[in-house]
Length: 146
Image 1 (cartoon, rainbow, N blue to C red):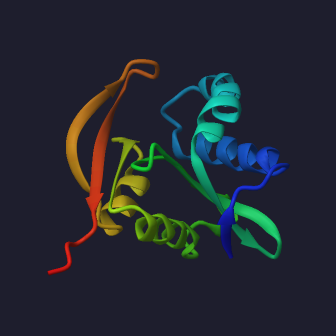
Image 2: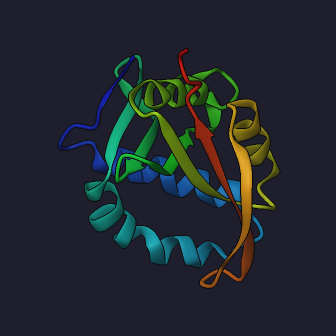
């Protein structure tokens, strides 16, 4: 089941984000993610529209969209990766917004492949100054009805 993030679920969300982001980015110091937790918790998530995926009443994944166009986060708990939850979250926001973009580390091959599979295309290469790693800016556009 997918629904909007509710008050009181931020700790679960941050726990998923931290574990998933450390696992997905072994090329970035774990300390960087711990130092980023406060801004994710207090700025990015509150400024985003966030939906959670519930499995047996527990949050196991989430997606956050900033400014109705930028996917700032899509994370699924490790035991649930590859079970369709990330795809379901992506389909949920694609049904709500006509176009979306995101930034993903080039070395995060699993995520780049996933986003390609979801219809996202690389638009440009970028550089993450804080982590000193290259990223891809990817975008998706709903098909126009004739």
